Amino acid sequence: MVKSMTGYGRGECSYEGGTFTVEVRSVNNRYLDCGIKMPRAYIFAEDAMKSRVQSSISRGKVDVFVTLTAQAEDDSTVTVNEGLAKSYIQALAKLYDLGKGEWVKGSYYATDLARFPDILTVEKKERDQEQVKAGLLGALDAALADFDSMRVREGQRLAEDILGRAVTIEGLVSKVEERSPQTVAEYRARLEAKMAEILQNTQIEESRILTEAAIFADKVAVDEETVRLRSHIAQLRELLDQGGAVGRKLDFLIQEFNREANTIGSKCNDIDIARVVVDIKAEIEKIREQVQNLE
Image 1 (cartoon, rainbow, N blue to C red):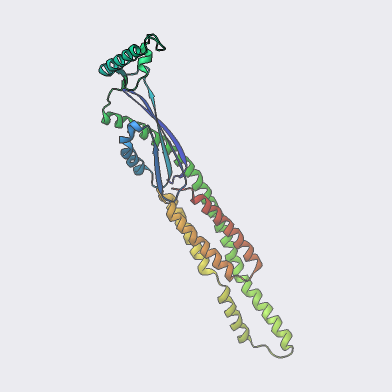
Image 2 (tube, rainbow, N blue to C red):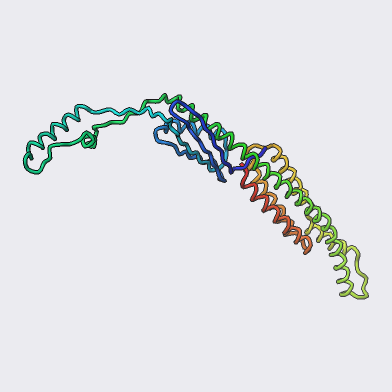
């Protein structure tokens, strides 16, 4: 099955310190471009997460967002630098003695002392990195699964639209094939009428008419182009049935569609065929737009 390059997925995984939430979002891009936004404390898991994304996605601009919801009971501890606190107290007492009786007040609170640098230190319990990494990857796997489901649904919709337009192109090609021989017959009739008008009573050489008609038929013949166009449509169906990351192949194939349509348009010397070619190219362009969304 084919997949769209655009999608969104969300996953969660609980661990000892709380719950990891991972969100994956992607848009169209020629190559794979993965960016991960996560708390700095967990940056050690970034490479493993990128590797997991690369094994699941081959193309697109992918953004991964990681958030942590901590448990209600915080396992952080606050410690007092007692030595430094005593030094501050001694310094404050000395300041008081120096300004005693003048403008220095003699009382202060513990909260005042806590404002000095490095008096209080907040320490968080060290987590096992492997355990944290496992939690992150678990949440990422859940997000990627959700993300992949959305891409498959969107890819199926795109494939159905592309196949429907391929059927339309086949119908238009049939019109070209039906009309092309008529243009040669009409050209021969016009040529005979013109030569009869010019030569009037003189006998017209049938061989000359046949030669001119054959030259014209060779110039406007589009049999090879219509056969190749039908072959490209068959290949389009095979690639969509094959599934997987076929976006680039389809992109190149659509270029061949355009090449054949342009050749038919340049060869045809008939207004009806020219109108059909315009319709064919319009359908090809719509397919190209849809293919740009496939992985």
